[in-house]
Image (cartoon, rainbow, N blue to C red; front, top):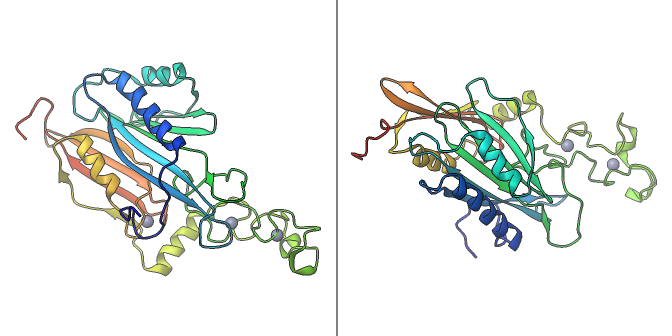
Length: 290
Ligand SMILES: [Zn+2]
Ligand SMILES: [Zn+2]
Ligand SMILES: [Zn+2]
């Protein structure tokens, strides 16, 4: 009983795979940023549901950051990708952001890490996750879990995209004694009817869900002061959206405003699809008076 991970779900202790992943990411980041030690920001687990509310397994995630102390980065994005590659990870690069931010996905034996380097002197963040660890029956890997989805999970299939009644086999199953699942009449038999197999709500559905639940469409606040981008990132990573969900892939940009670096974190809430946007005023580089 750890009891400090929020009210929703009692996740089991991190397994060996999660510990290995945390150590691996820390080692890569430490080699890249020898003078400014990377910081572990948080660890959490994603519950994986089937039909019942009780989870059938969990995915374990770790979040680290480096290079958020305002000093010029010792390593460019290419160096970072090179370090992953040398450590045996396969890389999938994303198109660069218009603000100079860079992202990539690193893959290794079922593990995945999202590498994000913010625009300007933005922070480097590494979000790593394990394959799903099932407690009973060993199911196949879901397309994504709540942290790794590119949107809000479908209420009916919880991200699986398939009909959970027949497990995607609409004909010949024994459902209800008919040998034919009710989803067999849809245009894509075996797929979840609610989300047409995507596993996600559409942006319009997420908007109407927020309206229905009385949730705001944006989550933002006044600009706060922080003594470093690392502490700003730690703060924003702990902050929950109006819907109660903290999971969000934060996109960072550091620019100048009123003579001070301004760090902005933006993202889409994985719980409700709200646009999240938080800004932090940082001290000038070299100002250690705080
Ligand atoms: Zn669905
Ligand atoms: Zn079905
Ligand atoms: Zn939300």
